[in-house]
Amino acid sequence: MYKRIAASCALVFAVNPVNAYEFSFHGMIKAEALASTQGVASFGGVYSQVAPTHALRTDVYGGGPATEQQQNYLDSQSTSFQISQSRFSLNMSHQKIRGVLELDFIDGEDGFTNQTALQAQEPRLRLATLYYDYSDNLTIFGGQKWSTASGIKSSGSYNWVGNGYRAGNTGFLAMEVGATYKADNLTLTGALTGKGRNNSAGGVNANELGSMPGIAVDANYSFSGHKVGFAAHFAEINYEDEPGFTGGSNQDANLFKVYTTLNFGAVSLNAEYYTGEALNNQNALGIAPAAGLNGAGEVNESFGESGYFAFASWTPSAGHNVKVGYGSASVDSGDRDRLGLTALHENTTAYINYGYQAAEGLTTFVQLTHFDTEYGADFDSFTTVVGRAGVVFKF
Image (cartoon, rainbow, N blue to C red; front, side, top):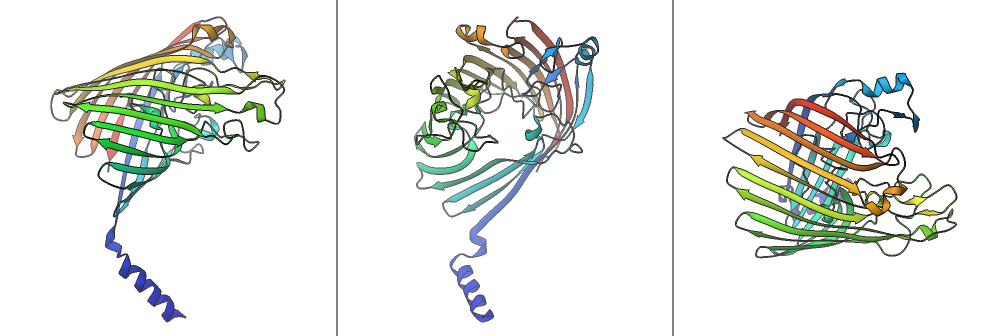
């Protein structure tokens, strides 16, 4: 038996020698300190500096009016030390096949509330994608990847996970199968994709019901070092098939965006504009509340929204880089009257940062970010400033 096993292994390696597979390990260790002038939130509604996305209301706590002490808490400055936005990836290639597996360390299940790894942070799967290079022009892909409709993926901020989401940047990770075709300077991508978030303790939900998945497309054209593009996502969310449904109708979830990157030597400009509805049902991380069934089983109609972001990057000399960015998102005027007291109506962010490459792979950085957030119902605005400084080691 052992001889047969040995012979089988020898045959496998003879047909597929080990050196035909190429592996590489990459990652980034990011250690930083953060400070905020008052309450700031990370996607949710609690005071959190894990991945700041907007300023908190300081007159509401736990869904109701804040007591004097609770308001004092939300008005307070705070400081934290973090390594949570570190990440690593394993890359593989074999003939025409490429694969990537990337993880980071965020407490997504607890709502981005744990500042340090000592507080139950755990690995989170970001990318798990296979690519098949059918030809020089055509690549077929499948797995969990950046959404085809993500456009410009980075807002330019050192807040990698917050990344300008809910303030003009949209498009996150998605499960997709599709293909990319390149013809000279034109790149076309089409994919079948998950309609939206499938995180439900009750099993299959409205984002998964129905035979039709979502559809995502991207088209971009490059010329003289510049790029212009268009991206979109279309889906229908099947609330009428939910077991608790009593009234209403299925909801459309869509996203349309245009984007550009312009390069002028030491300066590059990046800009993106989007419009759509039910973005948070798509996991596109927009500003408006997600659609869903209310307590009576009736469908809450999806919210429309739009936004934009832009940033400029300047490299005055080798090893030095400065970025300045601004972004804004708002719920459409026709939907604003349906917003609750703690729902975001409009959110803007502005930042400036400086990075210095102190050694090969090692960058030190500082950044100041300002959030101005307007909430629904009474449309009061709240502001906060977040400062961060740290080091990034890429390997």
